[in-house]
Length: 487
Image (tube, rainbow, N blue to C red; front, side, top):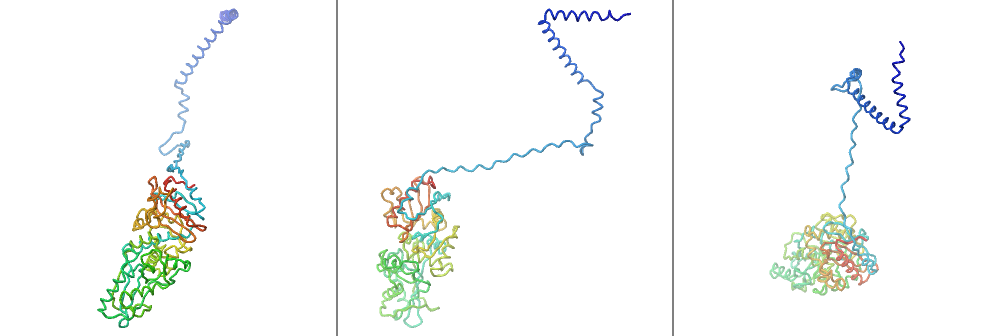
């Protein structure tokens, strides 16, 4: 039998489709696309059915994979899981800093200030707001008295009193007047020093102890102080102009010719002047007077004491008394065991100031009053010291209470006038003046209520008008307050 009849219908059908496509090409194309879509979709379904159906070969392949055990892989090491990298922790955000815009540069450029240096510090935070050569160590003039006072309060304490004593001599009718460093002792009933002891009182005690026996010989013992009586770097005219006496452990009235005047000519023999005053007070004007050392173990015939250190500190600061400041410096050195001469101060004053936690490494101290050009203190050190004074650390509140007040008291009574008068009463400070410089340092209660400490030095080519220039730059700092810029 032939297989041809069996294939004829499919050929006929295909021929018919081709013919129709030729006659209706557009319709045929649409139909073909639809059919293709159906076929493709069906194929997908079929493929899906094939994937989801059990497959013996696949099961066999799974059975041949290595198995894991609790202790690790049986035959192959799996890829380790990567360790996440720790993100960096951001640093702490710094505290916001105030943007300060107030300047004292114009006031500080005044040519009357000569070689100018200065420092202003926020006393509460300790931050230095203004620094113009503030780390330079220079002469301070009488601002040195603040350092001397702070040292005395640290070592001697506010209640210490200096004594002047009379003991019996080695011969009948002989007495020995022993100076204990009290330069404030009054030759009469009183003098310029508040609370001073009186030579009249001392003489009355001696006469009572002697029971009326006459005094025929007086020995003057001033050995408590040693070394030079006049600092070699000082200008001797300070003595004759009446600003300072020689530094001796025995004298009266600060060796003033006029005991009631702050500025008064001094003598070149303060010890002898004290002896004459004592003889007069005893009523023993015919007694011989000589200098020597008190014998050990003899009876005490009388003794008087100075005002306490707290009183003397404030007096020395308010009037800027050079001799009183030298007395305090020398007594401080003696109490420390540093010595009893000018050279002793180089170690004793910095050691005392270091007890307040101050860095004293750069200080150069040659006297207690500031008369010497050889002293060296920086404005930054002074603002740090005054910050402690403002905080009244230890006994330093005594200094704060004794400083001159701008426009009101002491050496600042006639200053801070005119355009600077807005700072009057708001500045307490120590003034300084020597031939080669003017200085001013202290505490400002600023216009914005902040507490500032400051130190301004005008050195070298200066004159009396430099004081007003210092007042002007200080008043400018008062107006700026904590907004003071270091520009």
